[in-house]
Length: 318
Image 1 (cartoon, rainbow, N blue to C red):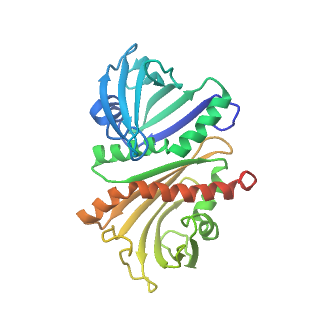
Image 2 (cartoon, rainbow, N blue to C red):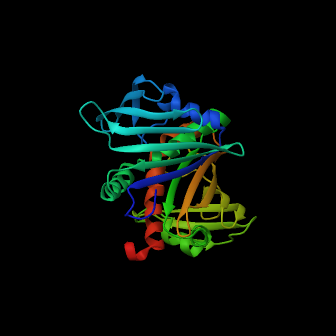
């Protein structure tokens, strides 16, 4: 989202590992849109979809609490595989909440999505920033990444993205320095300490995490890539105090290893976008089913950790 409270715009940039045509179809085919549109836990029913300049899209979003949200999107401009401008959030006697401009650009086989949401005033935009975060609205674009991974590569993954008001070098340090990680990565109420820390390619870090109830679990991180300041790749596994890999006690089924890829991108001199991708390794069908079932919980867990990271990066605002 755009930095600064004086702008009436909220801006989002995402890079998807999928061809431009696939991303466009995911946005414009009603059956595909229904697979990812909306925050986690929401579902969608399409009523009418007339994708053209001057057309409209009538649909109902169903919240996890059973609340229905009926919407009619008005398309002001549609240029296939390039550009879409529409008014969002209105329906019948309810005016639109904001105007969206979405640009689709091919980048070396991937697709860059640049979105801006224009509100009536900077004050309304600031209010909506808080509402979108609280409602998990940015999870929509993570769900799109997960859908495209399944559609294009046959991979089940988990994504979460967050932008931080800090330079990319500083954020990279917070993501890789064990002393910093121990402060923000554990779930809310938990503590973490590294029993061994080897943040280098080929190295392995071993940690203990004590949960709010007093139970302690151990984890093993093996570093595959450390490409300062843009990418970090490692595997992580649950293990016992002797570093023997185990399944976590809180799930009957869970992948034995998780491949974690973290990418960082500058959104300005003092703003950095962080994207986390989890991909199960050594997983049975039952493990994968539990992984998919727990995406909502994973999103909540990472959101809590990112909240703490944000506070560590900007202590004056905490």
